[in-house]
View 1 (tube, rainbow, N blue to C red):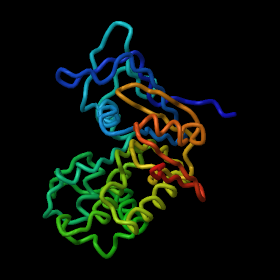
View 2: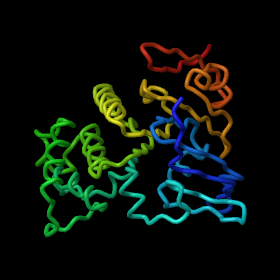
View 3: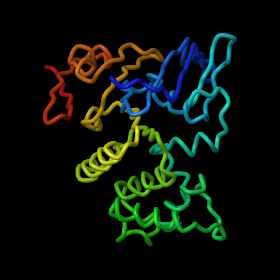
View 4: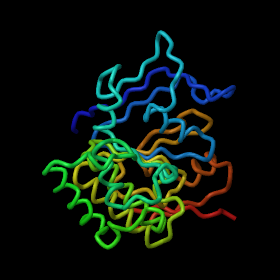
Length: 264
């Protein structure tokens, strides 16, 4: 068995959102080359965990607590963003709807959604941009304004932007939300291709159907606590998910994908 190499180590972390405590003594390690799904209901702490990793949400640091990225307690935001790509549905609201699609992808090389026209790409970045447009099948819409795109097209643009700098890790918060069936299938295919090419994927979701087949680990979270951490077949069961969501659920697996049905 290959040695597991953690890219993040969270130890005894406590975090509050206003008067509400989100995490109490949170302990978690996530490993390189280990595709992981963090699964839980609304309000479970999934998005707070995403924001904790993204460094847009800060814990209370106590003497015995720490967060290490790539074995460093102090890491610059630029270093973090160059090694980890982030994709969340609400990023669309921060994008100028009158920007062309290719400009949105281009902004990923600079870590900003507001790139000045004077900032140009080097030769390697130009080659990468062309490859992304081809890989994500964006040639027909690369000159379209972002505001004129469908939700599926926007998500592909933003995913291309998220991996422009070849991040080692790609963290996705509800990657398939508000997409139609065709767009969902296309995004799943893209995620599986990224995984096969060596990108470590972390999915934070409540949607079983978004879980790609090459997932090695599932973590169940509820009320800010990790209640189960194991391989998918041990976590995605009718009993565990019925308890997690406090509703009778029947789980079916077919062709490596998972679906949930009401158990009546």
